Length: 111
Length: 118
Image (cartoon, rainbow over all chains, first blue to last red; front, side, top):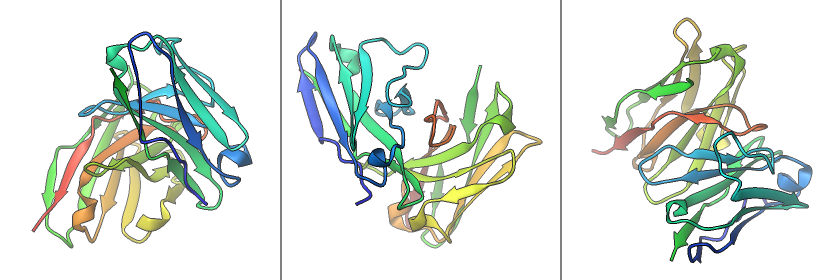
């Protein structure tokens, strides 16, 4: 099945750690395709947060980290800050679709 | 600095076509692919397709094939996305972004709102 599944929402208090999962299948993450993560604030363009599973672009704080194992990937955010409140999307390639998939998105609420 | 600047908002009637432009600057246009992504109101990001300004290779999302055409003009470092036979569910913010599926999309345009309404 060619989908990337993310939890619709996660939440945490300032300073806490949260993780966002991205579950795929043997035609995308499980096939070895890399996962990228984006942060999307309303009214702005998405921002690349993690590329190729674990790498942070210049300027992205090290509070953000990514991992990948098997058919899943995760984004971890430590030391939560109010400014982290946004939608987060994972992205990978799917060989069955011969195209790119985005996860459904996860809304992070900082309590 | 790398910039992708998109054309302005559009209002179209069902059945019409829209063409959105994305002018790149600050880098060698032919060295990176251009990807188009859209977000309908209340929904998530949807990949529409990719084009290589270097050789014109394209890959479109299956659900849009036959209705979408992506082109580039290397003389002006501009990418275009045309969507035809517009329907109400094509109402969305359309983004261009630099890059391909392998390394992620590192720079994005500001987005273009396309509203399809009778």
